[in-house]
Length: 360
Ligand SMILES: [Zn+2]
Image (cartoon, rainbow, N blue to C red):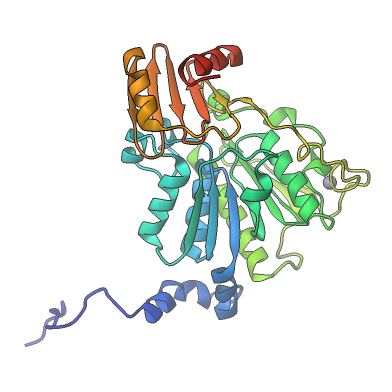
C-alpha cells in the first residue's frame, strides 16, 4: 500500500535537521544566485551593519538583511510602537503596540523568531553627536531608516570622518528616494543637498505614506547593501545615482552622484558641523504631536517613579518604558531618562511637564 502523503515514520524528526545542514538550506536559494554565491554568503555572515531608525524603512531593511543572513545587525531607535505604525512597519504587531515596546526591542524579538542564527543588537537610543561614536563603533556599513535630515546629516558627517559607506533612504507619500554614499569616491549627502531639501521636508503626518513606497526604497537599498557587503562595488552594479521613484504617478528620475562636488562642506572641506553639534535637548518627532526631551544620562527607577506618579494620573510600566497619562498629555519615559511627551509641540510646555513630574 502506498500513499502520496507519506506518513511520518517512528523516530523521524519532522522539520528538525542538524544545524549545519539547516544553515545550508536556509540560504541555499541565495547562494545559487551568482552575485552572492557561497563566498558572498560567508561574507554576509561575518558582516556588521547598523540600521539607524527602525520605523517603516528600517523595519523593511532589517527584515530583508536578517533573512539574507547578515551576521550582526545593530538596530538603533529612540521610539516605541504605536497602533498607527502597523500599516507599514512590518516588524511590529498589535501586542507590541499594546505594550508600547521600544521599536529596537520589538524588532530584535521578531527577528529572533525567524532567524535565531544572526546577532541583533538593539539600542533604544536617540543618535546624537554625544553617543554616535559608541553607537556606531565596529560596523562596516550604515543604513538610514531615520525620518529627518538632521540625523541624516549627522550620519553623513560621521561616515565622511570614518570613510564608511552609508545608504540614504527616504519615503513619504508615494515617493521614495535613495543614494549610496562612498565618502571621497562618490557624492555625499551634503554634495547633493547642501541644506535640507525643501521639497522633502514633508512628513508622514502632512503627506501620509504608502507602505509600498517604503518597501520599494528598502528593497533597492537592501540590495545595494548586499553588494557592499559581498564586495561588488563595480559600476554599473553599485548604483552611483540619486534614484527617486513615485509609485503612484510612476514618475522617476536619476541624478548622477558619481563624483564628489568640489568644495562640499562635508566631504570636501571636512567641516563636520553636525558631528560637532552640542546635541539636541528638544526634538519634535515626525508624524506626531509630541516633543522629545533628551537628558544627559539620568537613570530612572521605574518602580519608584510609578509610586510617585500614582496620585497624578494613570501610570504603568514594563522593563523598557514607563507611560504616564496626565490629561491632555501622555509621557513615555525610558530607563536612561529620555522622555517623549505627546499632546504638545511646545518645547517649553514639555520641559515644564518633565521638570514637574520627573525632575529638573
Ligand atoms: Zn560631499
